[in-house]
Length: 310
Image 1 (cartoon, rainbow, N blue to C red):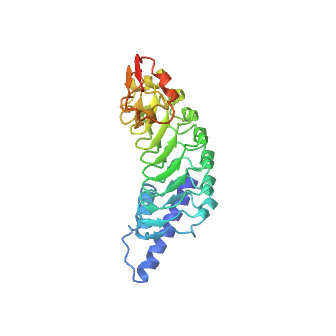
Image 2 (cartoon, helix red, strand yellow):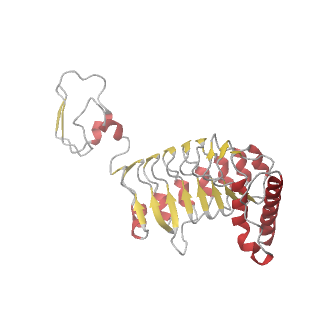
Image 3 (tube, one colour):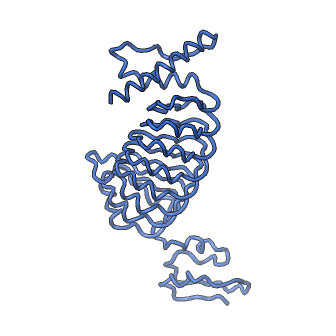
């Protein structure tokens, strides 16, 4: 802890020196003055955040010292892509790049932050492309993993299930993620946390398939948000059991819970306007102008008593 704070204080010193140079060059800054020694530990991160915000705007710097243990460029109006050079900072334990205007894909080089233990925040940007599976190597991650409110796409890497110490925030909502959630997410560290404060947060995306039964192991959850996706099928008993212990349980809204997966596209098939859900008892399409094949999914309508396709 002392080593980490020493490095963080050094970052503040470096930032303050840059601020003094900017002021001496006629550039106005509003960075807070360095705190006294007795208050330095408590104020270090706040000072660093203020200082870095003052020197923001434009691309992220690429000349950041590789010895830095905190990568803090939050809410600074930064634009452009995330430098691959950041992967050289192998001592980083927390990443704060959220609330900027960053674009492009997430470099796989950022998986070099294998010592990251506390925060990894890239939310509220304009990042695109797939989540690098290499990020699953951050097995020491314990507190906050945030990628929400971006334009990232593709499926959730199964390797993220290797973060077995992550007990608090798993945030991926408001993205373009698709496909089914991997069963490995049931290995996240929210399995038995004393405060039941963990958050599993993937709403308003394009996740499909059924909720993995393995998610029922996340008994340390306080909030479970997966609404407004394309999730289908029944909720497994093991997962449903979580609802009695969480503060916020948002699952059914905007999904197709209770509908057999794969049926949604046929429910909106323009050829069969009366199809409805699998509980439909009658289909009458006798217009005489139907073309194409009869969907095999018709066999799922076990309550069907009448069909007229003449």
